[in-house]
Each structure stands twice: as C-alpha cells, then as structure tokens.
Image 1 (cartoon, one colour):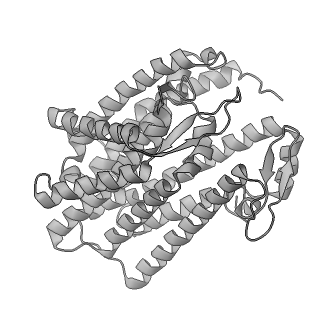
Image 2: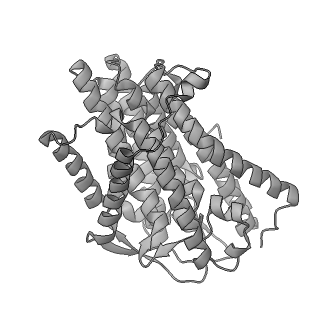
Length: 415
C-alpha cells in the first residue's frame, strides 16, 4: 500500500505551519526564560521592556557554546565505543553506530565538576549566563541546520529529493546525513542537548545553594529525575537505534533545533525557577512525586526494553511468557505482549509521568514548571497520531487487527 501525495491545500497548510514554528518557537523559549528569571515565573504581556532582556550573540557565548559542541563532537567521534548496527534502511543496508554515550556523559559531568571545584569556572556559570548562551546557541544551531540541509541534499534518495526547500529544511533533506561515520542525527539527538539539560539543572542547584545555603527537596527531585532519565538513556544507548526518530524521521530543523535548543533550554524551567527560590515541598508531597516519577521511569524503561529485545529476538520472553504478536503480510511483527499489549505507546505514558513529576516539584508557584509536561503532551499525542497513520497506511488490514487487540494509544482507559 502506498501513501497518496498530499493535496495542495494540505501542502500549503504544512508550509505555513513550518514557517510559524521556525519563527515562533525560538521566541517562545525566550519568553519562558525571561518570564521565569525576570518576572518570577508569572505570565506577563511581552512588551518592549520584556524583550529588552533578550541578549544578542556575544564572543563569550560563542566561545562557551562553540567549545561545548566541539567537546561533544570530539567525544562522540574519538572515544572508543561499542559498534552497533541500526535497523535496515529501505535499500536493506544498515548503518553502524559507535555507542560511547555513557563515557561521554561522565567525562562531561566530571569536567564541569572539576572546573567548579578548581574555581576556574563556577558551578552556576551556565545559570548566570543562560541568556547569552541561548542567544549565541540559536545562531550557531541555525547555521548547523543550513549545513545539515545542504549535506542532506547531497545524500538524499530520489524520493527525498522531491521535497521543496522549506519541507527539506524543516523536516530534513535526508534521513541519515553523515560525514563519514559521523551521523549528525544520532549525534544531535543523543549528545549535546541531553547532557546540557543535566548541566543546566546542576548549575541551578549550585546557584540555589550559593544563594540560600541549601538545596531544597524540590530541586533535588528535579535533578535526580533528569539525571536518572539521561543516565538510563546512555546505559541503554543501543535501544535508541530502534526508536521512531532514528528509524523513520529525516533530520532537519525540527530535530536539530529541537534537540540542541528546545530540550536543554526549555525543559528545565522548574530548576531555573527554583535556582532563585528556596521552595521546599511537604514530605508527603515530595514522597508522592518521587513515586510518580520512578513509576513513570519503570514503565518507560520496561516498554523500550521489551520492544528493543523483541526486535532483536522475537522469541525473547516478556513478563515470563513467550511474546504474542501479529504477523503482517509485509513480514513485520506487531508486538501485542507486555506493555505493548496495554497500549500501543505505553512508553509515552512513562514519559508523561516523569515530566509531570518534574512540574509538580514547583507545585503551584509557576505555570512554566509544567511547560515540559505540556509540551510532551502535544509532542507525543501528535507523534502517536503520525505513527498510527503511518502504520495504517503501511499495514492495512493487519493494523486494523492490531487495533482490535490493542485499543488504547497511550493512557489505558482514557486515550
């Protein structure tokens, strides 16, 4: 079964949406950062005085963020790591990836800690200079997006070359743009942004301690949750190769800017707000939020491991039983055991529970603490919709049979 080309009306709508997102999202991240750091996390009208807090790129920001990207690229490219083949490409070939994310992460955190302890760079440097770093990072990442676009155009398949400039720039001109074995999609999605998210949270914790003489339980919860999420990500780095992004998505502005700017600068708003407040949660609330986050993590991890192991070996037991699945006419197997029999994207449920826990850590003090959770609701529901449409087109009647067996998408009993 083949996908019908989009109508002109749909294409115009998509083009408009791409322009709005590329123009609006950078301003949205700026709005959140300014509101949290300058207006105590309040929703305010962004007048001229508000936007005066935007900082243009400067030399210090260029040196810092440029050095950060160079460090991460060097670690990714030169550190020893386990070679792992990705999923088959449309032509049947497989790309090889070097998995050294955990070592890269530990070296990066160790370097940050060493600079802090030595007094060369204070631990809260990133928090104190976030506006300058964000202003510079936006320019550098936009330049990188253009580079990836031109690289992708030179490596695109005949089908990918049918996209116009705006589609190819926003969505990606090619699925796997590479310089030799340096895979830009895998690098950007898994290295600089995720580790920088952790460093921003730790920098906020250091600033809170320097300001108030304590790190509150709310800040501890957020830092622990982010640290757990990212360390687990690197421990199970091979599982990344079976995710939707790596298998199906082309690599363009959406994933490049999203991974390098949106994730590290927008997701930790709870920690950014707490950096200048000594807010603590009641013990019962902290315990409940901790349980919520850890439960979400367990669901998320079990889901991904079950799918990953099933893809590598369809005979691997799930919850102590042989896996159940639907054998499609295309030859693929649709897993219906374990969490994948509870909901077609139960892993998204775990993601949402963890992100909600990070928002609840600031309680009702600022709506921006819930930005990560709300953004994930939109992102994951939209991704589920795209995945469902893709699978319905790909598998036809087999997908209908799958949907009869696995009714729920993300939240059993609700969606």
